[in-house]
Length: 612
Image 1 (cartoon, rainbow, N blue to C red):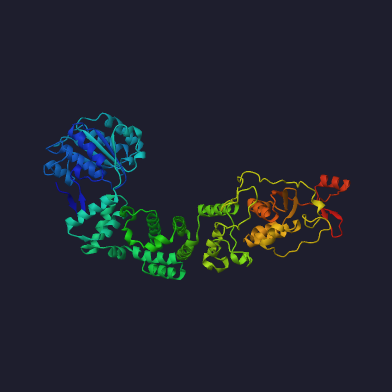
Image 2: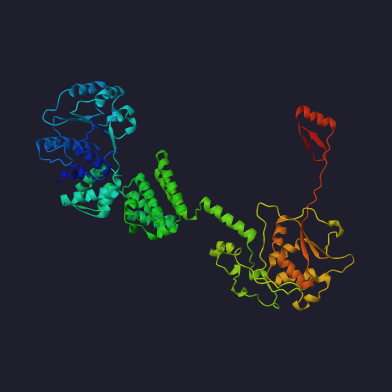
């Protein structure tokens, strides 16, 4: 059985030729073969999915002289009359034009008469949802108990508008939209039957524009065939239908990815000068960003992209992140919704292109939060690397292992500033070797790991100093009364073991400087210290400084032990600032006046008070 070809449209003649609706075909075929024919059918689904064509095929299957059969012959008088649309026993009614109850009453009167020369009298009512409530009520009894030779077939695109009382009396079939591959295959078969040459991308574009509707695809296909001169190409479609085209969109997107606003505006002007509307420009640009996002996600199906993956510029795909493509799509859709109310649509489009040029500098909220969280973790837990130019180690001390591999931040390229900022918190600092303390195991590499309390716990600092802070005055807490100032010069490693007790602090700071721990040395210098029997107390003005020094507790203890030859415990204290509270003196009469009249007290230039 061949297809009926009307112009460029292929009409199926049997249920098996109805592609894309396998559920409908198999169910109706089985019911016909088993002789279980319902008295009412309800076909629902989007436009152009074959509802009316299926109703005609069903009527032909029921009234064929060789039937009822799922494969009507198509040559008997009944089949030919139904195909031509002049059968007396198959009545097609437009529900949109016959909405009143009087039209339905005529049907009720006609069903009393048997078919003239067919097995069944079939009523096909298209767009049945357009009937009035009175008309539906008039049909109820007839649909529920019709004569045995009456078959009702209803078709609708809005099933929710059909009353439930009607739906419950019918066998319902839901027609689905056709896939892109199915539509393209049918268009290809039509081209072969008509002898028309074509490009695959051209048929793919027609099928995509049909949005799953076979009728809409055939309608557009008829239009394209009429101006293609026997050869359908993408270029002819672009020129005749006023499209931007994938090539020009690729070129425009390449300049957007490079961040060049001038060439972008020039290409946009060339596109608009060719007669492309701004709405069409935005539609194709939004579709392009959508396809780039799909390629970025690893999706390369032609049925989703509407073109082959190789048609898109690979540099554009790799230039943008997913968040940037989402933001670009949002900007395009926002302009498309607002452009109808714009005073100057072209200016709106140019502003959009200027924003898209800056798209590569856009960071999503998740990315920003992730970077902030990463920096916070590194600041609170990671070691801080100090460059060689800042550390300036002594020439007498040997270079620590691995130090020659570190590059100074001042020598880095300016373009790597952001990378250096993160690297300075992720590099591992190498500590200088320390002397072993009798009775203890010498430390190994990596032993100076910082153990931090969880972020939700309070830091282990005492808020009140365990000694009298005024005892040492404003000077160094480690100096006793009458003791001469300590020499600020460096201390050689050979003399560290025999240092006097008064020189241990300067030796400690010098060792930190030689090890490259300039940040720790600076933080230690900001506080005050006191060395008691077996304990070193460090007082700092802020919790931040105290916490940063406390992370190096093991390192400081080892250095102190190597300098003094003794083991000391470390205690960290945060000094509370003294805030003088100024007593506010208000006269009783003034206070009473303020409470009654609600005024305020203002200090004048002489120190007195003025009431307002």
